[in-house]
Image (cartoon, rainbow over the protein chains, first blue to last red):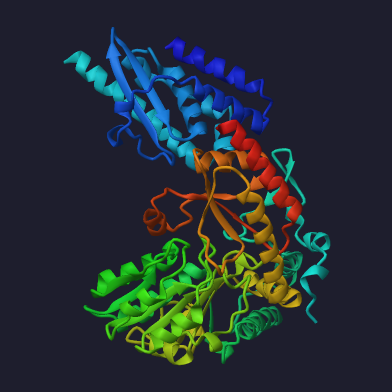
Length: 143
Length: 411
């Protein structure tokens, strides 16, 4: 659980160094997205699209050794960067930790200021979908 | 007296729009979202303040001085709109809260007593949702069918195909004068004339046209015409519906309430005359009054000056943008308003919009409330830059430079 918190604190720290400069923030987000690697082409299908996002976001998750591995991608560069932040925060955590996680970094970095309300709603859909995967994995683990 | 285009001093014109003089994200604001809403001219803002500081009172039926004063000013705007669109009478001007409400009013009030199963409504492929959904709602209730005028690759309506759609079953033709997504200027007079051959009722959505083009409802010969104040340098919350007297008198009210009645008892109600029959409740009084200043502004400038200024900006921008590698214009009608919808190969429209905003440039991205059009074009949306009389070539230069730098970063 602390891991999720630590990673969020890291992100808040990184963004604070950008000094609220919108262009620098967007450039940084794009760079983060470029690091998001290895989304399998065969998973780029409609069933894996996160509903409620304005651009296309694909999300899949796998479960091994008690940890969730998320993979995500988007057809828009800024969205890909934003999605990479969520993957970074929640990846390799236990289902219970993901379910319990309070994702507070978007508010701290004032994300809606630079992505707008509509994209913020899409971001919320993304978090919800990631938590849904965790619920499913937890149920499977118990059964 | 009208001035010619080259005589306009854009810099002093811009001073009348104080909102333009600000920084957004540390850069001077460049406002290219005029097709969504134009900025408000200073005299409109002053009029709003004056109303709330001096004249505010509910209109009609008041005998005190403030009520008289606000009523008089409210009716002066009606008179002004009547002259602006050359309607035969001022009573044919109804105030609503926007173009959308104006269209809904007609769809509901006219449609509910004039449409039945087997009847047909003709719309065009390039309509805004506000000129599609109201007709779908009434079509569902009455069993009428919707037919759609197709477009060519330039985004122009195919008039021959439209002629084939027309038949004795056609009860209404509703279309936009200028497309908000593509800027296509439709041959409105011809479309109405063809509809009239089949005695079909016509409604023109003039939301995009009213700030740019001289509108003459008698020359157009349409039955209804709708537009909004906020796209004409005026306040939000004010829409206009023009309707022929005979049409307006023949159809039932849209909403019930105060103002629209003659006598009310629990057994029955008799309705007021037009236009009041359609103006239930307290309207946006201050905004309607202030709208007159926006009309005065357009009249003083003159439509021919506005048109030539905007055309010049359009041509200049198209030349600049066409030189950008991967620039794909969407909508290249031969008769076009100052709206440029476009894509850039390999880059998502939202990324472009977001990065432009970071550089202080306001454009619109998305489907522009024309999803059937976007589906027809096989795209999710576009970036749309729309110019107004206060925009400059320097702003277009900054815009194209910004676009180039964003593209080089995102490719």
